[in-house]
Image (cartoon, rainbow, N blue to C red; front, side, top):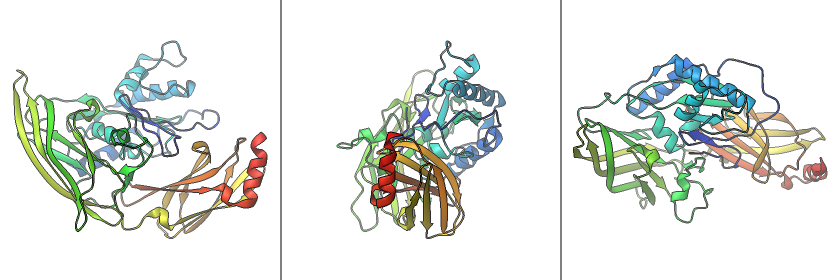
Length: 399
């Protein structure tokens, strides 16, 4: 499973899924995980508590496995996936086990923790699995690793219990999903090229008295806002990565400043240890809301000056709320340079080292919000629209 950015510069990994980013320069010196394993597990448990599933324990041995895989990745930065090759430097059985059993993310901002996996439904389902009992975490050398397969089959509920995301009454839900996942949920949407954003992907998971889930049948599924036609959604239930859950994919981005009601009904087929399958009907209805203002609508990006070695960018944001901004210099849709800065005021000037290749776009990803899992907005400005810098950049295309 892979996740890749709207700028096609990164991918995300979960048990067959990879979140790729752009490497920049030589590997850093050995350092501690950021965030620490304990802090990352606390983030995960805060998220799980919001959803209503039990907390997981921090297994230090699983964190050590992830650390081993980070060391392997430092020596083999082009090897991204869920296996280590014994023939390559840094290989270890411990790291290979982590690669096969973890959610992986590449080139995320330091201290990002679990945030990269929240928008991608297949990653989300693994980390919010009701029977996940333990996990480990390590983030270093541009690799984040969180274990996601330590399940406990005894963590059952006496009757069918459903867990939705977004949760009931959740505010600030991102209106769109930018297709940053492989397998890519956007591929399930007819006439979507795999890059066109959909609405935020809604997920439902189940627990109950069964040993395993044999299947889920959905009789009806709707997402609607008061006074507006129902949202056109794609319903996924059969994909292996769903782990017995459901994903609803709105074909188009949701509206800002809108409260939606999602309703799903159907049957979960629970299989007992002796193979007996028992149907468990469900009918769910809950609401969530998107943020009232599109953050990108209040952001202005200006390329003020371009020199032989630097690109000087000014960000004007109609808000004093601290946010994290990721600024990328791109050639068409390929990120060449990426930096992350904390935005602490309405105006901030940022100087970025200029790559040797021709730059055609500057893109900014904003992160912020009331929770550590916030909404994201993007705004792209074509440097070609800035006459003098455009000529300078084109002249430097020879390197």
